[in-house]
Length: 202
Image (cartoon, rainbow, N blue to C red; front, side, top):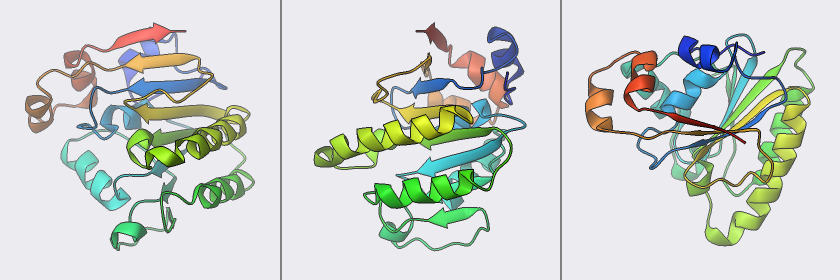
């Protein structure tokens, strides 16, 4: 089992997330930008995130400001360069455009070949990253990323639309008074209960 940063979630899941799982985290909007999902990632795994609609620099500042616990070892940022955002971070691999799915897949596969421990991949708010006419290619891309990941750890995707054809878990997050919760800077376990999550095991 892979322990997360949320003790309550580990308890509900009998110790954590089972290795080899595929997870979809459903949000009613992109308001949170995957904040809670960052805390669901493994404590001891090699954690990778793929960003399609926000720079890592921006997201990390939000995580720090709202005191959300997280640990990320590799970031594949497909947003910044196409939006002329510049920053430096040794953990980040920059992709020139969100539509360059083969480049993302290649960089991820190269990273997997260098890693000996279990992997936890989190693809954030992916459904708002591409044009509608690119969605078929994106679904195939997701399948490839999912297949590569579940052989080594846990695959997770966040957004409003479930694009996973095969999944083990769906975490559906219902958000109430999200503005108040985020401004209160509560720790994520308190956020988790205030948002009243509903766990659906498929």
